[in-house]
Image (cartoon, rainbow, N blue to C red; front, side, top):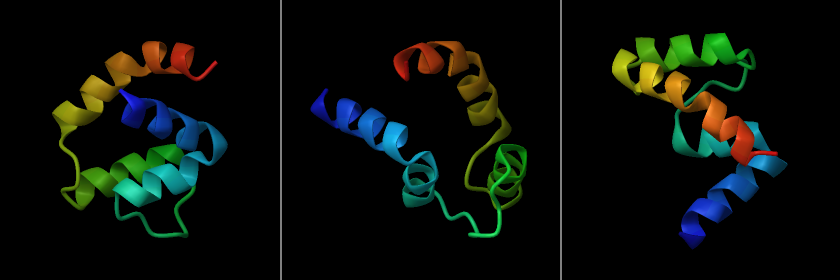
Length: 65
């Protein structure tokens, strides 16, 4: 549970660094849609994972408040 709180804290303070720590994203990509497309194209995530993340988005946004 502490790990989850640490992840949320890191994401709040620097979301780009948190994402780049987990995924291989070129530094010249900063647009969220381009990031998702890169992750899909490079096979780092599946469309199902993206769909699941989008469904969880409202809960995640509440957590970030």
